[in-house]
Image (cartoon, rainbow, N blue to C red; front, side, top):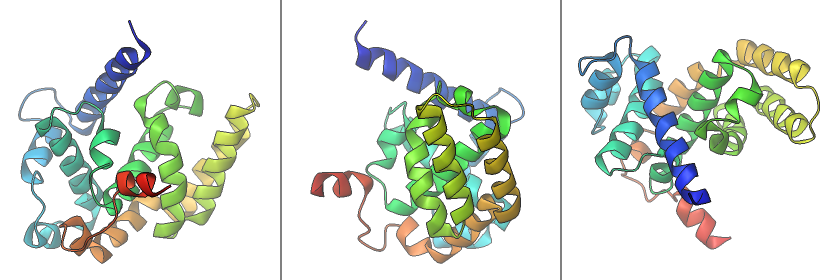
Length: 195
């Protein structure tokens, strides 16, 4: 098996697990399936009517819905063709959720590892610079094969103090036009092409 094939299989498995974890049961009437159906298309009306505590999940559900619709098992591939606010919200959500369930080493065994740098870039944008710094330090400690326990504690403390998922809700409210595609926001793919 080629390296790309193995990576694709792992990415598909992670996407499947993330979708399953969003819901409480594993049937088509799961919470994740309902959210993906409800937010398959974002409109100003449905985002405006969405309570703050569900806004992040609405954007995540939209990304996952597009990934499923386009038969792209890896949400990172879908994010490359979506406006930048999707990447900011999705990467922060994915990294925070993974690290709330396990340690950094476990995160590196999932497709979420591809979201870490995006989350580090996005956290200051939403107003969570301490969380970004803690995540960057944690990533660097892991890369240097150092103990990550202190870094994980620092990350969790920063998350507790800055509440990045709550800040994401405010960020979403402030970026509804970009999420709806009203503005010609550069995508991650376009930014990469310029480099």
